Image 1 (cartoon, rainbow, N blue to C red):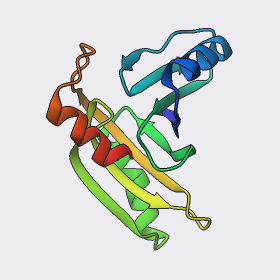
Image 2 (image 1 turned 30 degrees about the vertical axis):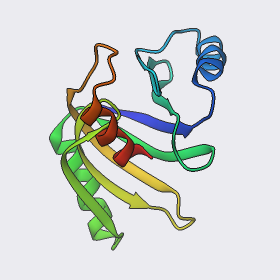
Image 3 (image 1 turned 120 degrees about the vertical axis):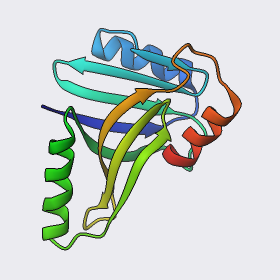
Image 4 (image 1 turned 90 degrees about the vertical axis):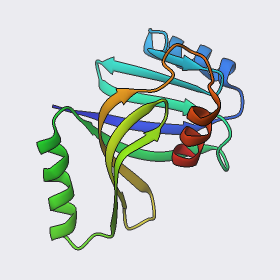
Length: 139
């Protein structure tokens, strides 16, 4: 099963957590000093915020899958359509490890298809390399 993913770059994390927690009627499932994520079932959405990116607004959109076969299907459809893509295996990003395929739509909006395989630093502690790896991927 797939989950829609939206990642926004913002300035004030606390202010945005208050806003989106009210909007969604739920607190973030993951929260760090520079990052927050909601995993909603209604609608089925992975909604993430992070500070430190370039500009404000949509960083990227995506589809999160539960099974490796779903990711392979999305990647195959992209390749058969001739889309430029970039594959990442076991990428460390957004406090998680994931297998990913990146595409850009005709407007240049970046899309990420991914399967999360593990968590990084989910105890809320910002640990040096984890934070730097996350920023390199999500910013």
